[in-house]
Image 1 (cartoon, helix red, strand yellow):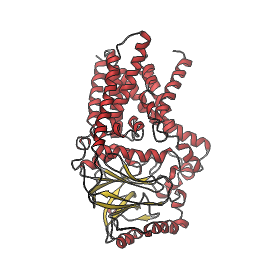
Image 2 (tube, rainbow, N blue to C red):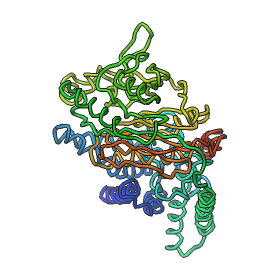
Image 3 (cartoon, rainbow, N blue to C red):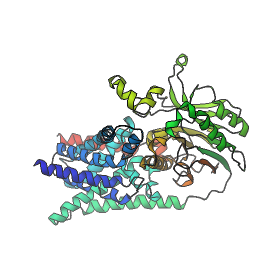
Image 4 (tube, one colour):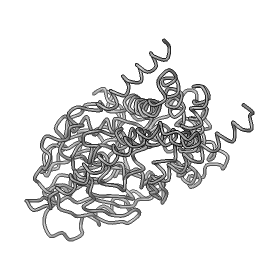
Length: 513
């Protein structure tokens, strides 16, 4: 094939996949998710798996350039040189595009000896299998699941409670792949694809109807409640670790907590790394301990815990639960660390001047250490609660693991001040809607600059403090647990992803026979 035509095709699939990315918050143009991948499927089916891999990479790159557009302004605000800003943005997009290349190549290869009628199904299977595999073992497919493009449709995403995070991915790809076959049939005046198109749309309709029924049965809160107070201090990220700002930052928390309240809270939640100094794991930070005693209420506080080599623990991005008597009643260390945010991958290979010039904040803290996968849940007035810090919320496996161990409440503390008023804070916030539905847990979220909120087990936001609004969000959370058994997904895991992995393996084996 002429290189010019191949480049044109790659550009077309990249552009169309970029439209799919517009379903993310913002601007939430969800309709593109149902047909934006048709060019990728259509053009990939016209060649071998190697060609499909190239087109898949182009599509993935186009998608991620749009989804991660916040990388550029974030780097510029940090005074990173312009060429490095573009390099970081495009390099990240390229790395994330690799799994799209794998999914496209595997779909074409596995379908190579199957009847044409099964091609759309193999695309859906391969896509879901790769997404499921990557979400279990790597950071991939964390923030960019296709299903996130449908976040505005509460009825549709209720299926996550039994289908997990990948059911909508399967449905979206099945529709796209079926429409691609229908396009071929329309040009050849055939109707072979009609059953697949009809079934794919029927599947989506069934998922939507199920969700609509679930939402119609959502009861209005009427039982006893307990008050939660969520702090959103809006601390400038570039002041946080500057000693000259420490007193002002801590005074800002005092001002928020001193504001009048109608009754004592049952829990006060501070954001990630709320205290701008190192602390010890077992020693309550005094700034929060004094308020826990004064209010007679537990406080969950984001801290940076120093290394305690005698106890075999390294420095950690962590949270302390401080009891009303001022002592530490629970501790959580972040499990999923951010590359180049909390540790430098292959640090010995990174030139020292790169760290000194562009990773100085990280280098001042040192590489952090990830916490254990299974950590004790914390006790609250609502029952057992799990904690996630920052971008851990985008990985379904952590919320599901904790829900399966008895967590009725999920508390996500974060600091999105790095990302200013870009798409990133809104993308990060909205994934919590999926975690709430998938596990049928209530999510309480505290962000330094927002968005702070309470999301109920149906994914409905019951209280919210918008981005870059300084304040304290006071709200009542029902004490009654509407889903004591949690969800089917929480109890059984990613069954759909596992089935797709097995079906993909069978399809690949068949292609070699």
